[in-house]
Length: 219
Length: 231
Image (cartoon, rainbow over all chains, first blue to last red; front, top):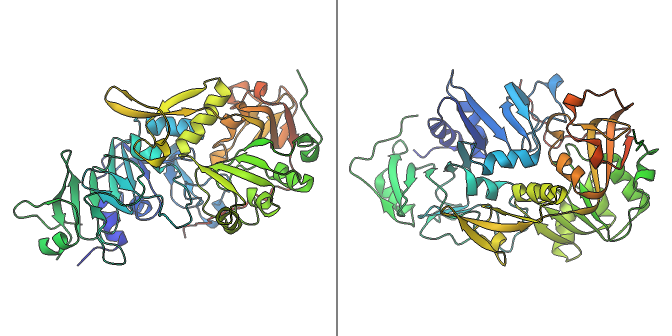
């Protein structure tokens, strides 16, 4: 069975390591925060100027001066720190954030990502996505592998305006986990429970590399 | 110490002219200069270029100025929460320049710091880099971006003193400190204005040297866009 959004988030949470600093994008990536393994110390960065995002506040703790990049009210994690937007992006571009997890409309087999603009539709802006993808040491994309018209989002080349080039390292979709190879191509690492390699081949337009006995993911 | 206190928002924005380039602090609706925006709406000044990370919502923040057709151009990173903005953009009444958020922050910082341009990796290989110089440093490609400066920078702080020293609170800091440095005239509205000497110098985020006018704002609404709570 293909994974739902929480399933994708749960699988991505297995990529977290103790003591890392992580920036989570809006959508499925935000859900990853719910699945950080017990006892693991992960510090979440919010690009509007906070390192150490805590859970949503209780009703009586809501503070308009404390929001995340999705404009949601949040709390401080123990040990949190505050800074300006310039310092925030110094952290990001300076390579001090270990992992960025974000959504995508398309990813190409050489790791290009498109996630900010659809020609002909109202363009809302790229926010911090271009800075993040140009800078993070490790970028994992969380997305549905096929769009609502059944078209693959893992492509030979992106058709939409790009957010960044050659930057995506790993992709987790409802069907599988993929490594984007430096020489180009999506290497299938794991299948979602009950999903066949044939189904994955059918949902991938770009170059797919399938080894023998691709394991089912354990989540 | 130099006294920079003005009576309120109307006096603070009195000389903002038609066609001025403004910077307005805030991220979403957090840390926006509510009092000065209201005064600009009352004043009815037009053809403004507004440099601000976001453009408010339909009935709050910069959205109030958009509704009165006071804004000619927005320079922002994300403008998603505003129907009137969308309408004016699609009808060609409003120009918009969308900039990666970190590039926007750094261009403002550079403007205040006297750095006319810098190289950033953000946007390389995308339409953001079109027409701009790109250069390789140690095997990676970077895009040349220029500074941003404004006729007036309008910021909001939590506390300030009569000589213009500012302290921000929580994530309401965001773009405010850089913008405070990048205006020919910087106006600060604060929730609490205290006599000089009251604030601990160790705690000051923005030095008074950057601030020309300061006043204690009133009736802060501090609207929340996404009230998310846990049970």
